[in-house]
Length: 256
Image (cartoon, rainbow, N blue to C red; front, side):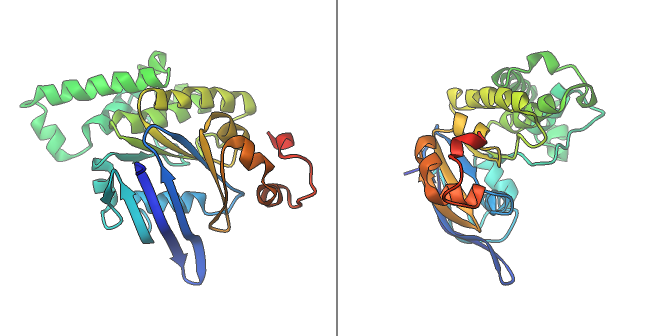
């Protein structure tokens, strides 16, 4: 039994099936990739897993059916995610941005802080752990607008980790990065599973996904067309056709 199990997951917008009966199984502690051409339905799939869009089919997390849960309850059971857009509080330091996520931004967290200081101490500890896991401890006191795009991407991942989830869904974390930044990002992301977390990495950067993931699913037109190790996916003619337009095109290694 996987930590995250999708069975016939479907998202439909009118006559368009953005995600079409997708089934996948992600074991606990795995680093799994989901790739596909632009418009394949990758972000829609993790939106459905997160509870942000209506879907049909089954979503099981840690043995529980969560498809009827709203997003905040899915987060409480240990499912966190990042978004393509980087939305940090520019008037807070990077450490303070993470602390908001670790404590939970609600009136209740503010009211109880003076009475349960141990909760605040625990949140602060998780923030330091998240910073360390992504290798960005030296950025903690800086403001978001003073660091590079690649560093801001790592901060958004650390913010998700600070909430102490069992699994993190990463939506296009390499978007806007050059090759060197993408390689460094992948190296840092790999640390998440070393720390015991499960990761689903969604990205169009095949070089990133295939270099860091244990197992890869390939999505096209909302359907899974291939799955397996990076080596197996690279050799699959359906993947070659999806990315390069022809089964007779150059080897997939040429796009990495």
